[in-house]
Length: 79
Length: 411
Picture 1 (cartoon, rainbow over the protein chains, first blue to last red):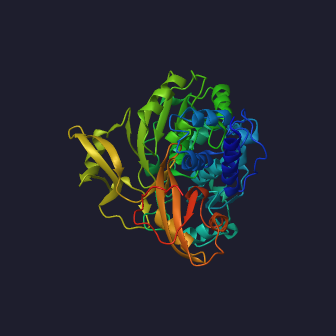
Picture 2: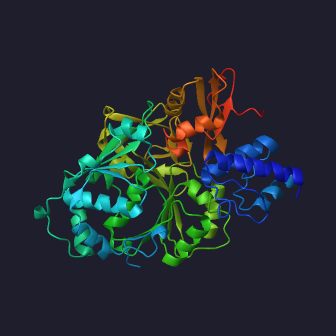
Picture 3: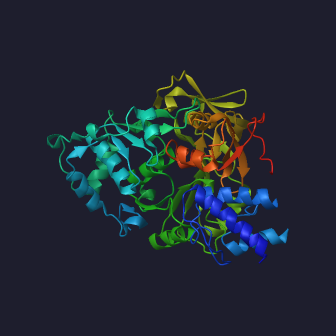
C-alpha cells in the first residue's frame, strides 16, 4: 500500500474520530473493519467519504459500502 | 420465541412475565420519558397506557438547552406522581395485558417532537386512535418477531412498537448495533419483520449471508434506490419489500411495493394535491402547537400517475429540511444555534449529497476573530443540539456563498 496515501488516510480517519471525541488510531492495518474495529458509525462513514473525496476526488461508497481499510485502498487505487 | 424484548446490551431476553411484574410493582409515574434504555422507554409507554395518563417522549440525546426550549424544563423529577393503585387491578398475564392495551381509554395521549420548519422542533400529540390507525391486528401476525431498527422515541419507532405490542409480538433491538451483531440477532432470534430507513439497510450491505426467516422488509423516511432494493432481495430472499410514507404529524399514511404509492379508498378524500404539493386533511393529524387549518401542507412534492384510483410518486421536498439518513434537520435551527456562539458573525448551513446517508450537513462560517476553531464550534454544538444535526464539514470563509445547496469547493 502506498505509504503517502496511508499516512493521509490515517490523518483523515483521525480527524473524523476526533470530531466525535472518539479514540484516535495510532496505526492503520489493511484488515481493520471500519465499523467493528475502528468504531465508525453511519455519521462518521458519511464524513469519511466526503473528506476522502475532497482529497482524491473519489467517492469510496459510490457503489455500495466498503467494509475494511484495504477495500478503501482498492477503491482509491483502481481509478 | 415468546419474549417481550431482546436487547443485546442487556443480555438475556426480557419475558412478558418480567414486564408484567415490573408494571404491577411500579408505584410512581412520570409523564416525561427520557432514556436510552429501550426497555425503560417501552415499559414507560405501556405503564402510561394502563393508567391512562399522557406520556411525553424525549430523545435521549436532547441537550439541556434543547429540553428547556421544548418543554420549559431540563429536570423532570418534580413531575413524578404516585400511581393510584386502588383504581387498577393487577395484571395477570400477557393475554390480559394485550387485551387491556387494545382498549386504552380516550384520555391517553402521547407527545413527541419533530424538527419544526420554523427553527425550533415542534410538539405533536396523538391519541390512541391516531397513533394506532395503521396497526394491523390479526391471527396471521401472532407469531411475528420484529427487528427494531428505529430510535424508540421517534414516530417510526413508536409505530413499529405498537404494531408489535398490540399483536403480542417479540421485539429484538437492531438499532445502533454493528452489522455483525445485526446479522447474528436476525439469525438467532428468527426475526420475521424489519422496518428501517434505507440508510440502515445500506449499512448492512454488502452481505454474504442470506436470512430465510425474514418475511417482510419495510422502509421509509428517505428515497430508496433500485440498486439497494435488488441487493436486499438477495439477502432476504423470502421477504416482501414495502416502502411507506409517514410523518411525525400524521404517522404512516401510504405504502407501496416500488416508488409508486397508493392510498386506501377510505382515506382518498382526506388527501389533496395543490401545485404538486401533497396536502393532508387535519383529521389525519395529531394535534400540534402550530395551528393547522383544514388542510396541512406536507412540503412533499408529488407526481400523479393516475387519478382514479389515486397513484403517485414522490419527487422532492419543497422545504429546506435536510434528510440525513432519515432524520430531518432544519438548517435554520442549526444556523440559529451556531450564531449564539460569540465570535461568529455569519453562518450558512447546507446539505451535500452523500452516498452513505443521502445527505450530510455542512456549514460555512464567517468569524470576527481568530479564537474560533472547528473544534470549538463542534464542542459548543455538542452541548446544544443533537449529534445528527451538527455539521460534519465546517468551512471558514470571508463571506458566505450565495447558494444553500452549493457544493463544497476543494481547497
